[in-house]
Length: 513
Image 1: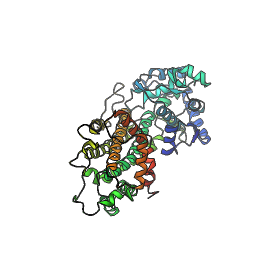
Image 2: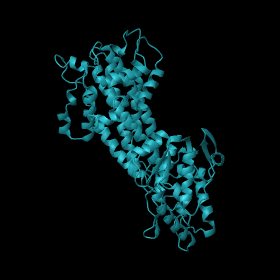
Image 3: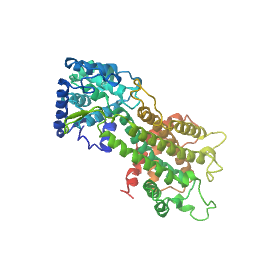
Image 4: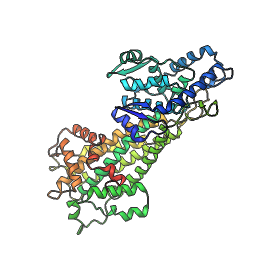
């Protein structure tokens, strides 16, 4: 499948489709005139006598060094190779392809000076499955994601490494095997390729997409947990949330009402229940998850703007007829968005973990057996699964500390304030993986708890979710090897299956309320 993108108009939905499906990407033909006009202006500057940064000068602190017209092509190649200093584990293929698509979108705006011929190499690589090997560490998110993008550009010119047909090999071999001609860089093209926030933005976007899925799953898990401990749905009353006014809170409460509608368990204890109020982890799920949802939505808007932005330097202002240095490569918006996503992930997990702790504790779970096992003592049940969630919750708390407030001068103090967006965005995958497990264990505990309420049953929607859970994870009777169960539960969350079973995405938008 191939998506045609209009530079400046790509949506979050399109970007998620690229990441999740591996769709190839091409730019709409409407982008061609602007791309070629900018490239023509660069060629004119390269042949002229006036110093233009990155076109006929050195880079960074070496900007005062003039480059002869005959050396401008070598200048761009040297730039790429010298900046291939990334280290660490390679970025996964799906996120790398998204990063390449983002570079296409940015250059397609017609302000980078990269030719259509060179951008076509990216399109061909995406179409034929040639993926550069991008070391994940080495960017401070300021003069663009220089090292990661340099590794991408290196593969385009036949240097470095790439993955083709699931095999890692020299990039030149991968291009040849796929029938893709390596790029020959024109003036400014190397700089245009390595300047920009596309690595940080791609990692932040994948963190956002996964966090939204996790939040949707937490709606299901919190509802199932509420029935497991025979909690009250009174805190979900529409009027309560209308008086607060926050959209996310209102949306989460509405979704929870829909998911729990028709629960026989709930109806069984509306009257005569000695408990006046439930613990906060039950009662305040709309307030906590709703605040996280608002934060994620705001971050998503920021990242959608950044995905469509021109973020390299200098920029070619075709209408004005000039090439101007600026600072769009500084990834502060992405760093802030990544920090906000991290906060949301940590808090979704924190309140989910407290529900796990609630359900395994017989003093708080309203007559559920200790650790949700039918034979406590001989069996430990879900005791250590709860400990695992506590460990992951704590790890996410540490990882949620802001990265955007850090800065370290680089490049001989030319780049004296940096965003740290790259590692701020990279950490989101680890945090989401942890959250998959926390919510997965909550689903396991809640399913077990609801089954202990038989012959009373939960809502029709939650019965469908319970059936899905039981199709992957059997009811826990005697103790057994638990790691596989936890992995399968986490996969139900990560793959969007449990939240999809309950149509939570639509409920949060009010489409199925």
